[in-house]
Image (cartoon, helix red, strand yellow):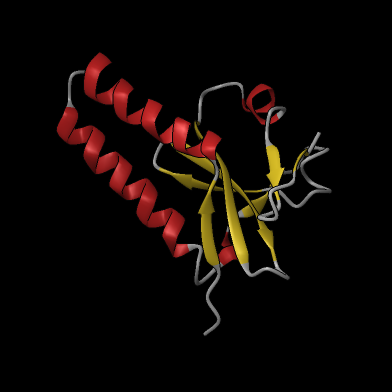
Length: 120
């Protein structure tokens, strides 16, 4: 089976670090934070085998750009697939109750060639 490479963008890394810090420090449950991060990471890396398993975002402009999302517990992993490069770009990891539309306006499309273009 063909596998895709997973690339986690800088913004998605920041999101993951913020989730870890919030649960560890603010909620004071570091063991839960580590377990949550592990579940998110496992779901992200499972996309290497089945990148199209996440649903396409229903709202524009993300729908026409084929931005997908994958629910993991109370979080949503946003990503897009670059089929010719065989890569999955993880662009955001957000708490499900946040204003998703507002957060998605800042997604950058990272092509792997060093070029970064705003999706919106």
